[in-house]
Length: 113
Image (cartoon, rainbow, N blue to C red; front, side, top):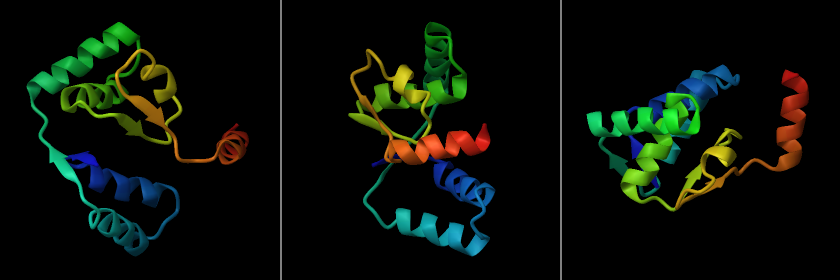
């Protein structure tokens, strides 16, 4: 598992946005960090690559940042619930994996209309 800098903090914030209490969110992130992980350094080259990918794929730079990291680290997959990554990962050397079952994604889409 590859992680960059502030990502665990972002996960905790997102869990809070989805209604998890602060303690539960913190415990979830602490549990995640108990698994083997490699922290990846990010530099200006990575960010510049993200902007190039963003222009190439006509997609927002934030998502393309993950693509740049995956390319740079020679990752074999990106695991995210963000469905935009299915298109972003086409023609890449890594695959997109969404661990949320399709029926759950469809119910979530209906709720958010």
